Image (tube, rainbow, N blue to C red):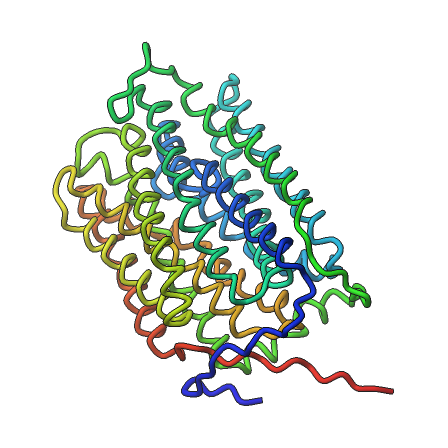
Length: 448
């Protein structure tokens, strides 16, 4: 098997008779887009960190503790691989999606209840950290299985359309959610004002409560996917051999291995988001929760604009091009946050939001490298890119805590510089990838 990076090959043609009809493929594309959009709609609390950090700070936590919910999210990155090993049957794909969405709904509901209760602040903070872990376990699994649904239920030529729908138009719902969040936290949003601000703790609890029906709807829609029936369903293998059986093939493929390393490094950069939110008070002079809705609105507005364009670039220039562009956006966002004064600082959230699509197109790159037989295993290994980055948020928070004891602004800017360095390395390594990766060969079937 040839795996040299300098060898590039066009995507192989799709067989003439795809096992899913054109009508059902359209349904799968739409369902992928809608479910992705629903995750954007609930993103205030599902993208763990941006709201959690200011809420934890309000409850008296340090910068390090404020970053723990996002670290807990990344710590559960191995969950998709574990789930795929325990439940390898294709017939269970939809059921697993339903269970994951339902679990996220239950956990966000619990946090909402605790926030309005008389529980100690330490319990409320612990609940948000636990919600980060549950959301990390479930939504990383959901992402992997949605991509497998896309792989099994649509022709490869339609993936750009699905990604454009989900990550180009989906952020519109994220933008709407951000504006509603701003209204909830501050009592006003883009000229709209509530008769009276929502009091604490309800203003913090409502975003978590809103995620409950959103995730419930996503769970129900997951039952409507159409995927080909597997005549010979794979049985469960011994856990260790099942979980690590494909490591050799993954590591032997230089494109897959390098993409994995790039993913790990990039997540160390993207973990800077919580510190950027907390920095609001230093650069603008208002509490972080006062502007977090506007920051998320910029994040999703830029993400939406970038996603609409990147789907077309993916089809024309190949999967590496979208990784390069989003990496540059991420670098620009962090660099801007380091130097921009006053409200100009807010633009950094938009640029970083567009850059966050890097992980989406990195996942698509791994999908483009994978054979059908190794798709689920490789996607599981891809989810592990977040695991080594689990300490990133806490480390960046510790940097701003330690070096910001006498000058808070300096501590934050130093943490931004560290994150920027990681993204520069990721960009350089991405340039070493082939623009059109070679797909792994399908394993040979040995006849008795």
